[in-house]
Length: 271
View (cartoon, rainbow, N blue to C red):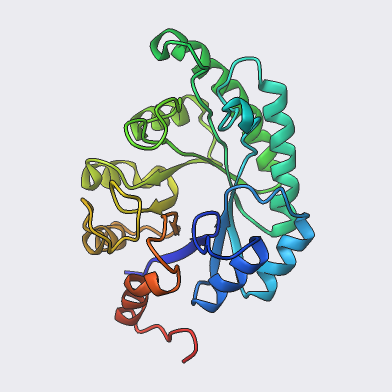
């Protein structure tokens, strides 16, 4: 069994540091060999690529642009009337992925429009999403990139998000039927069953404790040593993104990861 590979989500980790380059440097100094960032678009792609390279990191995941955050948008993939904006954002994400050498792009589905009933608009939103995903799959294939679909928990994280269960995401992936579109899984309920059922579709995993979204070894409902062992046993080969909210200093809160690396016999940063 191969050990798991972890990536630092620098949109969440090292919030005590200003700016993406500083966070990338801190991730590299903490022993990470890979990083992910939700939206790198405030920095020129060449600057992000240089910062990652200098930190000894490979970038493994970015998101498509969220749309108009001031209007409450959080992705555009399934949002009716925003198809042109989604495709423009996809082109920007591909430009960054190419410059960063980043192989995966999370294709954000977006939220149910404000004031709309989820059940009433579900069919229309799925139709829009399927159309956009077929377009995206073709664009990404030309660049040898993978697109990811991430269901987001509507009970805890984002009540309005359209894509909210791995079952829904898997059904959409089956309808699109493109090999370069995969599932992005964050740890949620029924984990043993979901991991075993959906892991063949999974291209990326993200972890955070529930319900507080803190470090994996912080108090909460999830038993991460068990889950990490399960991922190893099931042969997961992708990255595990650390997308959690540090309860204190990020580096001091990485003891859980240092312990994992020590069990694998990996030399630690500074040794």
